[in-house]
Amino acid sequence: MGKEMLVFVVMVIVQFGFAGMIIISKLVMDGGMNPFVQSAYKPIFATISIAPFAFFFERPRDGQRLFFSRYVCVLFSGSQQTNMYISLG
Image (cartoon, rainbow, N blue to C red; front, top):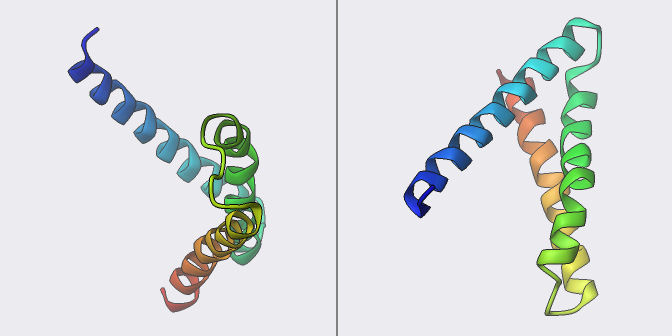
């Protein structure tokens, strides 16, 4: 498999990931979960699942304090974006 084919395979895997996220979101909301709670759980679960890869493959080079502040900003911006979409939609 060439390098060009690898791009398409990764794209398909990412699309399956998005489809799985949408299906799971639909199932938990039909089960009675509040959309605002679910929008907070989504980035937390993503952080827990991707953090080991980031720790081993992309170690922070500019200090732990700056790394932590970036982490906090990213964590809250994703849930805030979803909350705005839910409340305004």
